[in-house]
Length: 126
Image (cartoon, rainbow, N blue to C red; front, side, top):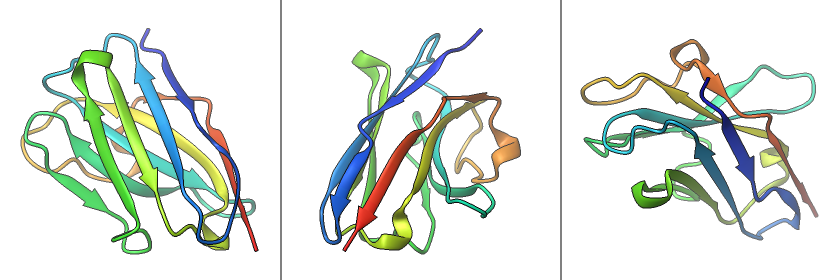
């Protein structure tokens, strides 16, 4: 069973930054799809960014382009989400997810990913 664990959430003020970390056991460092999702209260889970760890292709949600950056560290089996210029609408529980490898871009739909972390809360206040 693949275990996915997120960390790094917290409370920040508008305009601040946070970095989320995610590690996945049995992480295939060379070829897999990893993604970050978020879910705000009363809203559906939405994709934030996906990354193909082999081709390095990424997809960002329009709402985070230019503010969020995804990166990986294969030596640590880790995926990171650097979030900058945070806004109140970024407040949500953030989830890391792992999906099977595909060539090219990894789709950003939740059904694409079979292994999920427990989530980490990010709260942005003014």
